[in-house]
Amino acid sequence: MTIKLASIVEGDGEVAALPVLLRRLNDWKTPGQWVQILPPARVSRAKFLNRPEEFSRHVQLAASKCGEQGWILILLDADDDCPADLGAQLARQAQAVAPHRRVSVVLANREYEAWFLAAAHSLAGHRGFSLKPGDVAALVDAESPRDAKGWMAQRIAGGGYRETTDQAAFSARMDLNEAFQASRSFRKLCTDWCAQVGRSSGLAQAEQP
Image 1 (cartoon, rainbow, N blue to C red):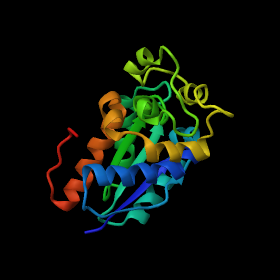
Image 2: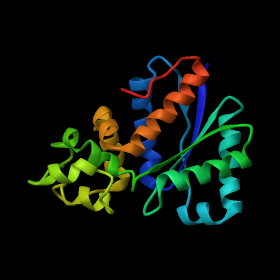
Image 3: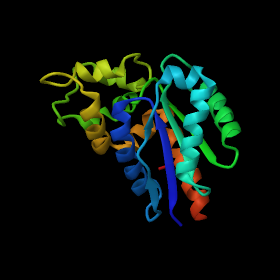
Image 4: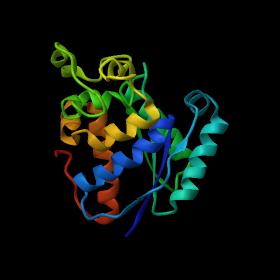
């Protein structure tokens, strides 16, 4: 059975990067399962979180796109919010808007680029990225830096980090197992993926890689 996935993201970079990442996640965690990853819908984070009518409109649109057997994935940056608390709140709100659909909410802590920090060793030498002396200590807790985009930019030769192009390229390159081990929010994405795709396919999926 084909599973349709309709996602909601907040950045132009994620529009291109998330499908790349999810296709790799499918190959890694649920090989052989067919998931139709629809083009993500981009929202304004402030409007999406603070205007109920905007939230409802986007969730309802995602519900109509993914169909009765589909799945809605909301992926936002946590910024300074607690990913667990805000994620649970948004999941309840989205489920109330679309009770007839499966919904997952993942908040990258603190932002999507934190997953690159979690897999930074695998990105070295790609698109001008290189680690600096002393970075090993910083990567122990990859989700702590407030400005992961800036952290990446400081380590890319020739002009810094460009979200609209580099995000998809690094998503295609990053070591998924390395990110899984170092990032709790990335593990949440993996766990939700396995739960939703495994549920649809009738397979039991383990959280461990």
